[in-house]
Amino acid sequence: MDLTLETRDIDGKTVVAVGGEIDVYTAPKLRDKITELVGAGVYDLVIDLADVEFLDSTGLGVLVGGLKKVRAHDGSLALVCNQDRLLKIFRITGLAKVFAIHEDQTSALAG
Picture 1 (cartoon, rainbow, N blue to C red):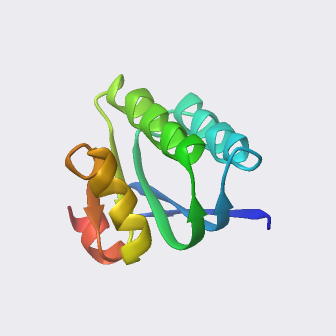
Picture 2: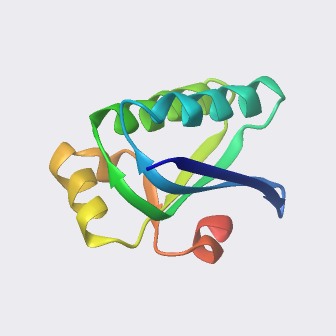
């Protein structure tokens, strides 16, 4: 399955809505999008994973790398995730303590 990325600006933050599967084949597309945004001076990101059906370790690595990139510019990277199977991955890996994870875009944008 392919990866879809839709980017939009809301309240001074950039939301990247991700759909499909984030795996070893598609993760570079997300990494490139995050790199492109940070390169353009966008340091406050919300990555919306609500439509993500699968996330592997490569995808987690891309998200961690994105967090490091925005933090280097005193920015933030929040996640929108409301699927138990994905939340379990974040809990098991300890990344639930690293990322600000929100149930919906509204709380992520406010947070």
